[in-house]
Length: 407
Image (cartoon, rainbow, N blue to C red):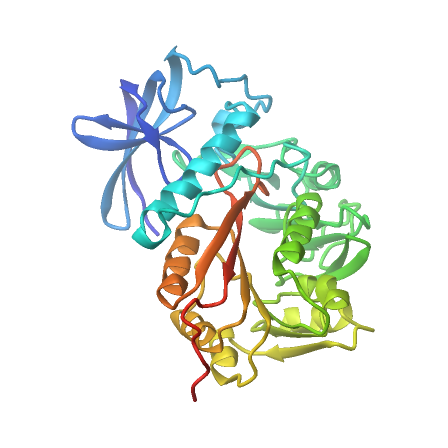
């Protein structure tokens, strides 16, 4: 992707009117929409203006340089790299207001669909630790092996000595790798909060690096169970809050003795392993072969779990048995339409949908509502403090029209 930028001494005084898709505040400048980093809706600010072309579209962004009229929710960002880095968007917003903004983001997404406008977004479940929670970092490497991040507006590299969002283990690895990683341009560090395991990729050859690298997998402990996670496999980046979210999902499933549960987009088998003792049988569906290999290890000894490797839409479409409940935990792009059609045909009594993107969640909930499902609740969970990202747990009830399975 090529960006053509015009960035210089242009500044503007702007009234911030609302919230944009990337967590920035939105303003108008000469009739154009400007996404402004470092502001809070309602503030009057002076911002440096950046004009650039991305994907053949002209865009305008701003970086706050002075706050003329401050929001009562503004706090001093504790990270010295906050403005230069832009990796997290809301360190200047007090945590209580961050939760309010995230609830508004979810409500705004639901309100795009008439079928969902009566579905209220519940208050956001706060994170126990607003800082020091991430178990995974991706660093850019520049200039003689220096590690840091790239400002998403200016595209300038910023060397960082510590990231306040990361677990202490990640920052410990950062110190050991800093200035010694010139052999690569990108470096990924994953850390097991409950085990102390590292997974550092790629394999590093520099003998001055005191940490092993190139591991195929690492282990993490969650709710009393240890999970193996391979380098290509997904695992929640906030281990502590993930445990609270998984407990919420289990409660919303309302499983009865002998219940048959489908765990779609099962990943390394986290949901399947944690609900197995509450279900009669779990059918776990996962497309990634590496994740399925991890899941086989993670669910060893749990005889009521069956893993099916394949795309969720294909496996659900071929199923004849009606499950009692289904867990959907798709990637950010949401569910394939075929998966939603197949789910409506199967008509399980309950569906619990876990989403990291309110817009694709709302789109898919609207499709399921059109298929007769009633959305009982949408409960946001703050997995990503100091950023605009928000996880949601949506609970849907059996089609009210009593849809039956057809061939």
